[in-house]
Image 1: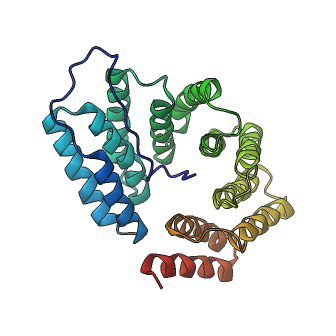
Image 2: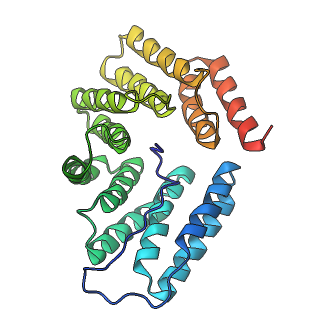
Length: 270
């Protein structure tokens, strides 16, 4: 499961929406495959050029389905590079396209909404994002089994917005639900490390004197990332680089440096 949503291919059709299909469509599958190559080496500049090129091509062709697939990837990309102007513009466009394609009540469409809500939260609009999270939750609950990995990303990202809204107890419950999903299977997933790190930040603002809870969360995250059976691929590298600044923030400098070095070695293929 990838909570950042950067490598999720959303292929949305329009067979029953009454709109005319574009005569030519962009090669979404090839675009995503090339995008994966960029992320595997952490080449964010190349990823941005690729996505913005194919976004323009989709617009020129009138391929709304293809455009939505690309804009969905751009949401995560703009979060990663911190471009709020383009990120919020992509939020608006993704929601417009979902309405046009009448896909908001489908699982794939809800995943786009989740990505849009997470982008809004990242750029200071947590309160406005919460109704979108509620919509995602309704669709997922109706159409997915309770142990589906997508619930892990949903609960984790909703919790972050709840923390910004100072709804700490609800945020803690969402984090616990996220862990219940991602720790339910046989495969060790790095996503649980992200959740534990996020919980450390929650306790810092909610229960600042509870140093034991903060430390325990960081130790649990480190245990996940050190697990001998965890797959150490490009997504693992992404998670390491995502968690490292938090360890540095809380004063675990050696762990922070180690995680950054792990990510670097994977990206460089060494």
